[in-house]
Length: 348
Image 1 (cartoon, helix red, strand yellow):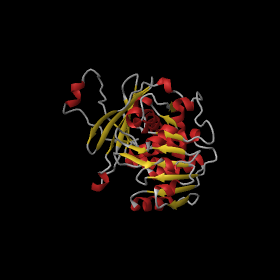
Image 2 (image 1 turned 45 degrees about the vertical axis):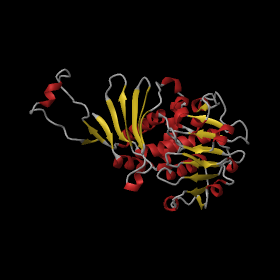
Image 3 (image 1 turned 90 degrees about the horizontal axis):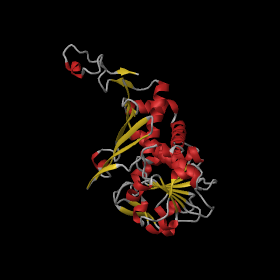
Image 4 (image 1 turned 30 degrees about the horizontal axis):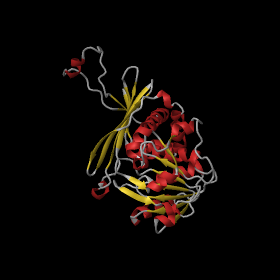
């Protein structure tokens, strides 16, 4: 039987654990797996691009588990009442091929992206960072805000979006967290001015320059989340040239990240090297660091592993017969006979 986690199950899981605890624990799962970087079979994700968006398959495996996520990115979807990003994923046992988990990954991806952002900032941002500008206030923004508050102690968040309704939505959702001081900015420049950390998480599939060089101050850490496919950026090229750039997986980031603007031999650092202590994340207080994050399959592996472990511990989800359960594994045809019973979905 395969554990099945739908949106309601994942919501129940987060409610029982608490979002702050989920962010903290998932970040640790991600850190643990980056420490095992060489144990994984890796590749850049497989993408099907259209004028309106992209659908991607993100596979990865080690000697124990095979994981994949199917995810889209369609910036115009909200105009018709649909989410910009939707996803589902699976875990299978490598030794037998048995599917262990089928799970929603829309909520899970938001949590894992925020957890990864905050984890990277632990290594790259100044240790006394307390303020963050959050540019792009859509569906990912609350998760980013709460991850940086929970994992780094960010106390002040300046909000800006070209859509005032998105900013109002984010401010209302953050009002339940009195430890976070929320400031509404009138422009990107106003939000960024004096911030220790700047997170950009915009959605448009275009070569954009959300941040320009005149906005960048010595010592800032930039968390660029929105540029995640070919033809989609958020930072002016001059910023990328001057920053200390850290990426998740170079072969994928060269295609999709902010560094798609740069020559193929431009210097970058893969995040696993920082986590493993091979190189320092921040080399001095005045450095501008950039986490050029496009999302990598290892983080989905970690997230699915966390969801499966937590769902089992809390007895959340259903057990479904995703593959036939046969008395004789060589007699698949028997499962089509009228006398064959059809088990109903059972709660875990």
